[in-house]
Length: 172
Length: 142
Image (cartoon, rainbow over all chains, first blue to last red; front, side, top):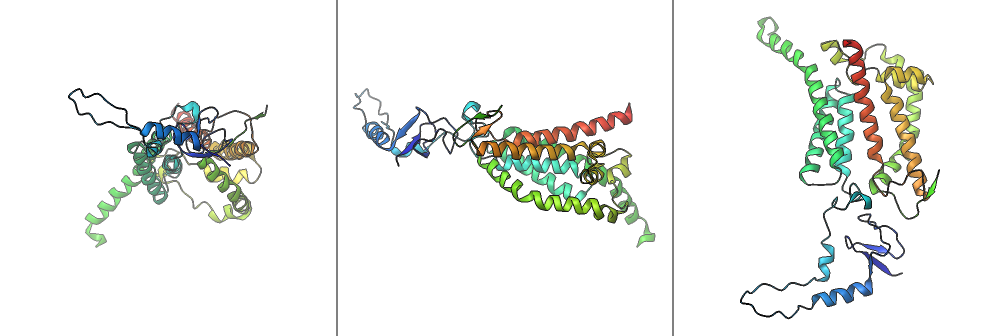
């Protein structure tokens, strides 16, 4: 079976695939076969003869390996599944789920604090590393912070009681 | 109503959650039936809300245990009244599993163009959670 390459990300797909397995871009009329890609890369590898103009600019051509340097995940338009279609959505989904658990269990301190920490960490990593699922990460972050504030409201009065007990010598 | 979408339209994360949904429904159902039959009685009023004890206000999760209990007793309106997220979560699960099952068979009600489907159900549950809490607080203060 001939393999075809996605023109958007360069991933290998089976002949006849309608959408790229890696990035979700439509494949119809937008592909390179193994033979045509080698012909194109051979043509691109030949450096054009440049006239000297006193500036020694490096001449660059496209090597076959350049096909692997596809756009970062999430940069394709949503129509082709670029948003949340690239595949790096695990942390964003985890952030949202943990955020929901954090708010739901805000009075169960152990569960809430673990879920809050997971929601915030996963959300921040998603946003900092520009992974897919920005909306889910932001929502998970917000829910995690809300859950943290609610659980702090539960703890604070008990901390006051604990401090009062520590200061009262009758308890020593 | 159902349209033929062709091709492999399922996101990798959707395949993962679909597998979890296929495996988890039976133990979850058995636990729910046990909880409704005898597990809830074991709690005997010991489950207290720390947030309500401190502030006097209901937390976003208040009523969830009773809603879960009434869901598996078959009293869906009571379950919805105590905490809508339980019913909303069950509906989201059914919707998600049906949507992925249809896509596996190259059919769809709506064409999401290979977008991640689980996010829509998660957003729905989060929205119901916050809205129901806001409504509870509004009914107390107004």
